[in-house]
Length: 256
Image (cartoon, rainbow, N blue to C red; front, side, top):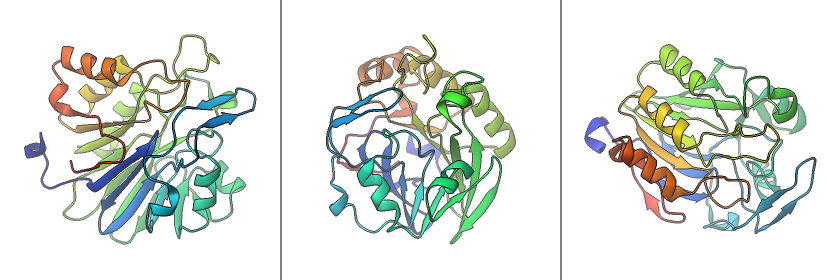
């Protein structure tokens, strides 16, 4: 699997749980969608139920250079402890809506680019549900990371659209590693339409991404995931893409 990549894409990567992944890239330490609360309920228009706490507590996560925040409006992507962490991080990239709500956040519109150190970060479109879902789900974003001598990494955020993955590949070119939020998240808001990739659409996205390594996150730890990791692995195997998939063990360091 790793022979397809020029060099490791995610060095000393660590899956904290849910969508939260810490990794090294371009000489910096990155964190996706911080969630560090213990299990509990989050009331709102739709109550979210957190079933498991972080594999590593926030006090032990270490210094973070950049947070990639797909969106701020849902507790399964930014909980209370994660929100407090943002104030300690110099660079937090997210949507313009998040920037309007959280001090210190830099909002990026789709295809806008910012440079952090030697790393070019491109905000890429994401859709948190079926077409037209934004008035209910809100605006979300994904990210593509590129740097000299480094592979290209795509971080999907809460994106459910394979068509948008196609647009990203068409515009950016080759993706070497993709961190995909999977799990078939579904709170019933859009009927049977999931608000993140499910196993079937994840396989379709993997096909679009060619031989990119797929790192599956955000598929456990919350009550609204409709599919298991075992089903995801089985679906990739049936599609002859098991070699492409990494399901990281929470709390264990791994490399791609």
